Length: 411
Image 1 (spheres, rainbow, N blue to C red):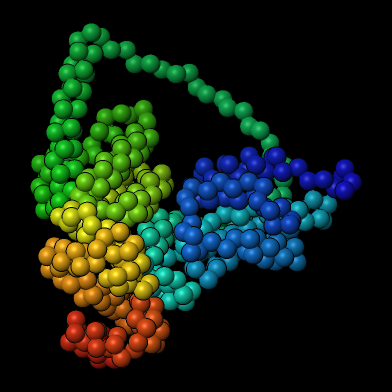
Image 2 (image 1 turned 135 degrees about the vertical axis):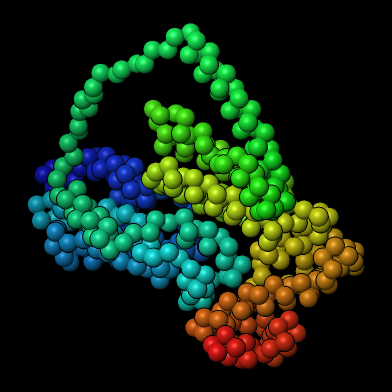
């Protein structure tokens, strides 16, 4: 390649870093062969959604065929939205900058169901997918157009390093009496915070929203500390919420929640905390986060189960679409089938087959409500290999056949 035709990606590295910092969205710098030169990723896309290599090549081909002033807005089969603009020099195409994924509307349960159904994804991935999609930025059409125009302009000109000019820093002076008062107030606040922090964590461990409501009422807000640091209230609020997220993780784990469920919730809120724009939003986010950890505890807690039953329940929850028999599960968790059967029935008040079938029926309801898949397809999606058996099981738990259930939802 001739020297004049070489493309310098270094300046675009800095532009990508600025984009990532300002938008809080993933930014990638891709060369004309579809290779990633730089990837600034704030979160990990679930494995079932990853197929970037082909997408990079498709984006390259699309941008190469159009003018340098064009940007490419696209949505993949998983409903993930992206914007890309090409890197051009002397009418030659050298790659592109990609920003996303993001969404143009808030992801609903129906949206997730459609993604799973359309792409034939494992139904056991539902919770992880819900957490992932909820963590994405939601961008309106005006904002996406602005991002597209910004990308085109960033890709057109070389990067120029800026120089910071600051005003003089004014330091407020405190006398000895003021400092003494400030220290005393800080000690009281810290003791107050840790007292209610323990009460809050105990409530999350039990999934007790009523207790959390009482605690919030007593304290007015468990997230007031950020207001007391006027120099950097946003950063202070972020730090406190990140700490709260960690404490909620520990409380949920103590409440008997599998690490996979905890990780999904924690990662989602870590991203939402970084993207929160103001103090009122932080306070609302803190309340939502606490309640969501309670929901996870109430839905997935195995706190009162013995170790072998915990393992069996967790395996069932995470592999609902797979073959699940007492013999297979017993072999996987290394326990005698008869012993597991007795323990499982004693602790869950259900035999294992009924427990598995009940979970599968609950999942099937979501797809039957949508009406986008046939009853046969739904039966296979949730782990039934026989349509007649699925219908019998469904009626056992709902008193309706799948067809009757669909009709009742539509009436």
